[in-house]
Length: 286
Image 1 (cartoon, rainbow, N blue to C red):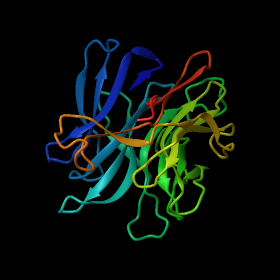
Image 2: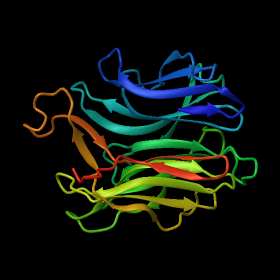
Image 3: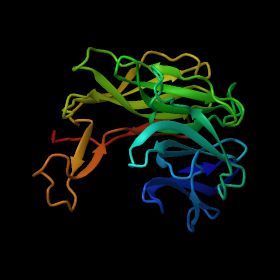
Image 4: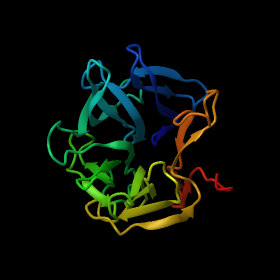
């Protein structure tokens, strides 16, 4: 969800769900009365009409334009997702329509070390005191050439028309079989232009067992370089990804049944610069 800085009654929310063709799609809704009433705007624009869409994100710039990020998956006739691109659609009418989009990260099938973006979120620099005002940052998880998951970011300086090459925010470390994975990149921009990216880090041994940590990295030069990661919270008992009980009668009986959830963080920055980070914890260790 994002609020128009020029009109706080103008809000846009994005979400995913089933589309008319039966595949997962991304949708947007908008409000002009502070969220009391909402209008369904429709589907996110796709590179091709029959494609899979997931992981929607939304932000607004200082001029009141909204940027709608999502993963665009090319589908085979069998329904198998062949490749993932990250696209960003732009609205100049308060979120009523998103008529144009750009490809921020392009996955090329068969090419070595091609990106495989996942769990993306987007943020715009709206601060008049920032030397990078107007920049838009799209952060995401990306499996690296060594088979582990890094955090990357791509940046637009021209209102979402074009995007930089991916910049590595933080790299996964360790050997195969004992690596720590990074998921759920959440970008935030402070009033001085400092960019923060928060994410979850956990061991991806099957099944994930924890402990999980919430970490962040920051950039003071508009995303060109990033400081070494630091911890928000360490050694949390959460396993990272986990299944929650739902109405499935096979929950707890058969593997893989239940509602898949995770401890990926969410974050926000207040007007006074205070950063707040939240995540799902397992206080009892289960």
